Structures are given as C-alpha cells and as structure tokens.
Image (cartoon, rainbow, N blue to C red; front, side, top):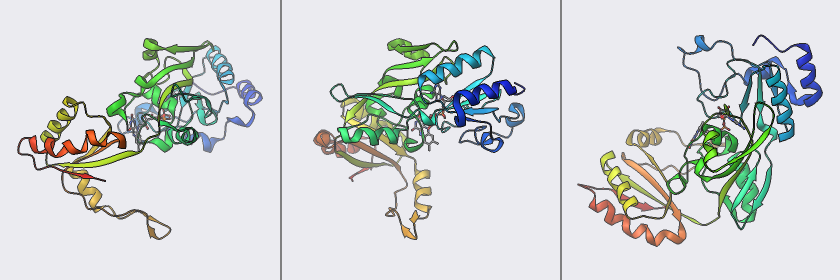
Length: 318
Ligand SMILES: Cc1cc2nc3c(=O)[nH]c(=O)nc-3n(C[C@H](O)[C@H](O)[C@H](O)COP(=O)(O)OP(=O)(O)OC[C@H]3O[C@@H](n4cnc5c(N)ncnc54)[C@H](O)[C@@H]3O)c2cc1C
C-alpha cells in the first residue's frame, strides 16, 4: 500500500484524536516484533513501517475502524505485545497497526463459575493482579506472563505454565468476540473457536475473551534431576500412568543447567537479587502441584526414579 491519503489521516484524527499516531519515529517501533528477522528473509519482506498506529478503547471503536479500513482496502494488523516473535504482527503491507494497549479491562468476574471476561490487550500479570484479591488466579499462562496479552495468546496459540493439567490455552477459553471485516461483531464458542484460535487475526480481530480461571491455592515445588532424556521420558510416562495430580512441569537440559551455572548473579542496586544455586549437569524438571495434593506425589517420586532403567535420579522438594 502506497500511503494513507490526507483525507484518511483526517478521518483517523477525528475519530481517535491522539490515539491515532503518525509519528515517524514511533511508527518504526511498530514495524517489528520481539525477534530479529533472519537476514535471508529481510530483503524479501522489505520496508515494514506502518502508515499509522491506532489504539481503540472499546469494541465499538474497533468495529468502526475495521469497517472503514475494509471499505478503503487499507491493511490492518492487530498487535498485542509483540512477544510472539514469529512475525505475525509485522505490517508487511504497511497500512495500520491496531495496538490493543488501551483495551485491557476485566469486564466480568464470576467467582462461583471461576470464569473471567476480559478485553484482549490485558497481560497475564495484569489479569492475575486484578483477580487475586477475589481468591482467583489464572489457570495457565505463557512464560512471557508480564509482557504478553490474552488476545495475543488466543490468536497465536500455545501452551505454558499449567499446561500439564490444563492443555492448550484454547481448551480453557469459553467464548470470544471477534470483529469481522464488515465491522460486524460476533461471539464464537465451542467448536467455532477453532476458527479464531491460532489464526493470528486472519479470520477476525479478537475484541473480548471469556476464559476459565482457578482458585488460588498454595503450591508445592519439587525438582527432579534425571541423567538423560530417555530416563526423563520414562519418568513422565509414570506420571501419566499413575494419574498424578501435577499442575505444571518445566524442564531444562544439561547444557542449559551448565549455562545457568556460568551466568553471573542478577544484581539490583548493587545487591545480589537472587541466591546462587549450582545445578547438576542433568535434565532438571520442576514439578508444581497443589500443596493439598503433595501426599499423592512426593512420596512416590523415589519409587518412580528408582524404577527407571539404570536410573540415578534425585528428587528435592523446594
Ligand atoms: C520470553 C518469552 C517467553 C515465551 N513463553 C511462551 C510460552 O510459555 N508459551 C507460548 O505459547 N508462547 C510463549 N512465548 C511466545 C509469546 O509470548 C506468546 O505467543 C504470546 O501469547 C503472544 O502474545 P502477544 O500479546 O505478545 O501477541 P503478539 O505477538 O502481539 O501477537 C501474536 C499474534 O496474534 C495476533 N493478535 C494479537 N492480538 C490480536 C487480537 N486482539 N485479535 C486478533 N489477532 C491478534 C497478532 O497479529 C499476531 O499474529 C514467549 C515469548 C517470549 C519472548
């Protein structure tokens, strides 16, 4: 797309005021995501600075913007926090980036049903902080928790902390509202969510998400060190076979353990901000489970580790 006409810019200014941004320097920031584009691909993609960045505040504004841009064939690119790193938010055809920074409200909390309804731009950390005082917490989240949005995870798809129990994020979504190219807003749920999940905004722009959350409960943590990947697989098979009530598992390989050992201690204002722990050169798996379930997990770990073929793993409760 060549550029926005003066009339187009005027329309955007009238509708969105300072929330329509044409600043050349700021627009550069919206021309890329968190990752560096591979050198071989960059020349093929070319210039990616959008013509404008617009921050709608609600679904009605989003509808107006989408209907107007569609009628003028102006490309639109929805952007959460730009943390996916797969290029989905890069405006390869320029046009307008829709930044969901201002759509970050919690619209409804149902404590009894353990569900929340949110605008798409809210981050996982913001959502958690809002619902924690109600005794609720998110069921699962990406490890980019402080800097990625709920809408972005539904559009990108994925698993994260809590997925051992709860699976893909889309499995935990009850419904979503999307704005179609015509500007019409539609609610999708059940099987139709497949049309939105992992679609990177191509089938519609997400304006609202209703998702399942959980009660806050004390967590227990136990780390296991397995000497090789085959044995780690065996241990996981045992967890599944025994239906152990584990909430989350995260593991690192021996190379990562070695790199962590070599990393300097994180400092804050001249003081160490962490306690340095030297890790064994092993596949280190961190299990997180509800404290109430501890007796169903921890006493069996020594047995599972001992059963694994020529296993010399260790379990340490933290
Ligand atoms: C340190 C780090 C850790 C990470 N950990 C995980 C992890 O544990 N699990 C995991 O799955 N991913 C992980 N990621 C990848 C990334 O954080 C997730 O994919 C995240 O959900 C993206 O959210 P976002 O708000 O940054 O989306 P963006 O990167 O802004 O957007 C992602 C895609 O969704 C589209 N989109 C965004 N908002 C909307 C909307 N409202 N409507 C329609 N389409 C939209 C965009 O156009 C783009 O195609 C990690 C990334 C980093 C940098």
